[in-house]
Length: 296
Image (cartoon, one colour):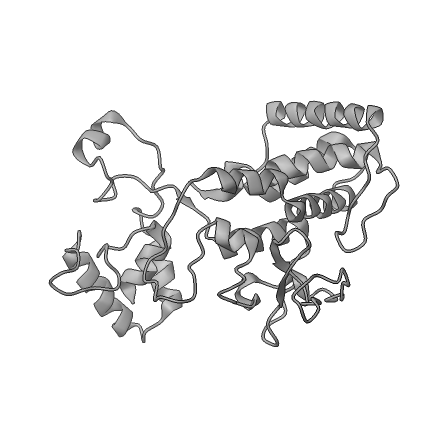
């Protein structure tokens, strides 16, 4: 158990084969540390909260991920944790983060699972299945009344219908046991973040929150958007570049009127406000950035 919690925080366990502690499994890189932490885990009443606190307040966990030639020569694979590993968010955590940033996350606990279905393009999305007896989409949409914004742990797991974002970002399939997830870096991940209709909706909801909470001044809106994604205040240079980007996008949409689609269930055919669409473009770029996607 201690090894699995360690793997959650560092990307790899002290024993690299979390499902096999036998002779055919990997040898622990720090056996004394693993034994000591296991003993402390039992001594503190099997408290997971205390175990997380113990790991996350350690100097090892609080290291920077910066590489240098000396450490790369001594520990090229970072087996002995001479620095922190940069890790990508898991698929479910990424979706929850997008909902939290946009201000739409539904904190409801328990209850029925959130259903998934296929849209007209054949992509698996959140929604109630309204296909006919032949399996063809009817186009009918049943509102979920906020249930679609619940945490990813409540999303229905169907082996034949993995949610688009989950499948793209390496969530395990439900058939075999999975003791450690694979982590890939492939082009469909970037394409989903840039082009997915779901991501555009997240960006528009994020822009609505920024307009509501950030005031009317563009620099203040950029500062809020940056802080919500990065978890820290931007530099003045970042603010200036953000303002210039929003202005450039606003001018583009003024010259090229674009339908505003705030909700996929009921897209508006009237041209959207160019200033709002310009801010949405910034929010989309921030939500698609490595600053959100990776833990550093």
